[in-house]
Image 1 (cartoon, one colour):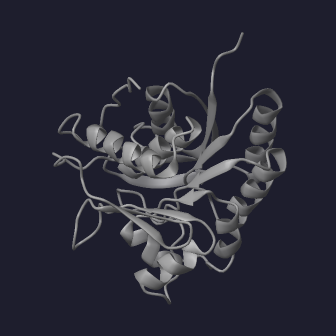
Image 2 (cartoon, one colour):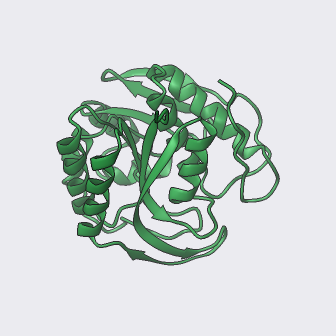
Length: 253
């Protein structure tokens, strides 16, 4: 009897395993889940230098998704870097076609921790449609400014919240560094201050937060508690050592 509970990462491949699908898989495994993966692009990078990204053909991405869903029951998907919003929309439509009840956690990555821009010059008009397919999006403060450049952060939060839930990561905040916020059911806000003082920054910490959140949602944890547990897991990851590459600590619950 197969007792695995499956979860899927659709993201890029990072050779240093600090970010992307390999980081997601480690996070899923630490939560007792079996992680499946679809590669959207191969990056040429380490933990401090990003040189380029070779994108996966969109047909190949969709074929990978099709093949996995033929075999596995997948209730939750975490999505990281994708070549364009156009390709992302194809992916989202495919996922909802295969499972109309699927919960998608989108990490709308604009820039790698080493400084590479993914969507800097892209037209954001189709992002409204993208949001309608997502259960929750997990931008940081820098990313949310880029999603709708003509709006300020408050206006952007109100606008996005009309479509989906938001976990706003506070690592880039100037006023309250490390304070995260959850917006759900239109503008219902939950403040999440740091549980502990973190000892160092980590390559891929945003990926870890999003995949930890996806893991908790896959484990049927209510959204507010799922966010708090994901934040705690990420802080443990940040405090796991003093290098840029963190260790994943297995959960006991």
